[in-house]
Length: 90
Image 1: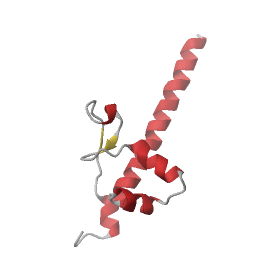
Image 2 (image 1 turned 90 degrees about the vertical axis):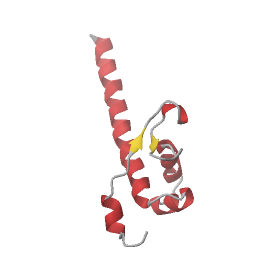
Image 3 (image 1 turned 45 degrees about the horizontal axis):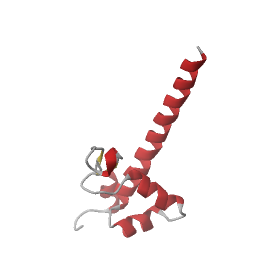
Image 4 (image 1 turned 60 degrees about the vertical axis):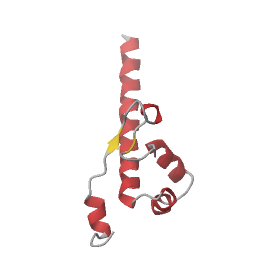
């Protein structure tokens, strides 16, 4: 990456996409078959994001984007579960 600093990479927009024909619709890093859950599994295994990026041949920005997306996805899933529970109690 000539001419791009680490700071520039973090500002670069990484797209997370979901299409039914790739990984069964699981969210993934655009242009790859690397699902956000794959990234999460690797970082949960006590690997630093920089090591995960090297292992997957991705940028550190892509790994951080996948982790950030997964956090929002988990929160959204929990909100759905909570509202679903409150609907059942009515």
